[in-house]
Length: 234
Image (cartoon, rainbow, N blue to C red; front, side, top):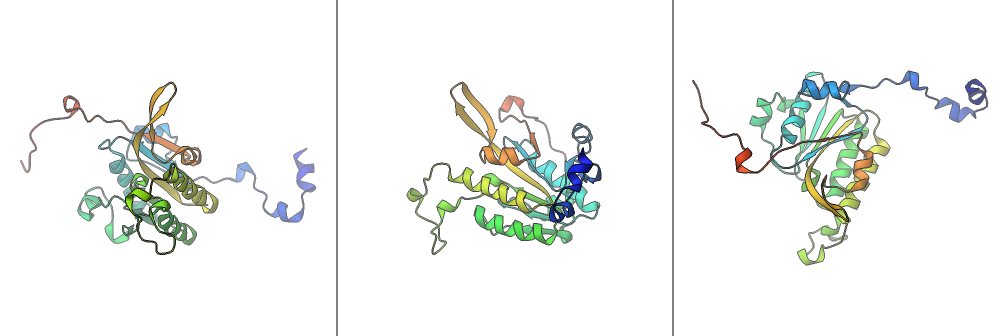
């Protein structure tokens, strides 16, 4: 019986005992009512999630709107703006309080971003958005002693980007207890024996650690674009 197992536990293990019935999961709703419903409440705090898909498919838009909703609920938020695309004017239009948003823009190395985000997670940050992991640079691009960029021809280490992103995700998963971590990744093409398959950049390990992966769809074909006159005013 379960009671007998618990009774026979050593005191140290017994102190760490947690019953599933005592779990108190906190969820973050998204700006899409339908998507929030499909996720049965939204994205889970204390876990890592990913938005991925082709460019201009709405990944960053939805992610920033989700961050804004978290802010309105009193959550502390951090944005790692690896692409350098964020503007405070656009953020304000999406509902973000720029006075309450911590932004990291000067770090592009995966190792540096990992160390910085790790410090914020341990300090108790509620929401971390990395836009995007595709724009980060693996450690093989830097000299170990001087930390300077290596010559381009010396950076061709197969699989190093995916290895570093995987290590980053494992680190976050190890220390994370309450933070909602949201990664944005661009779509790439995986070539297999049975053909080409669209998949997010970052490798397999990050995919296994993600609690939720949401694929965005879009088309760069001109015939699929919404076209019309842009009106300013009335």
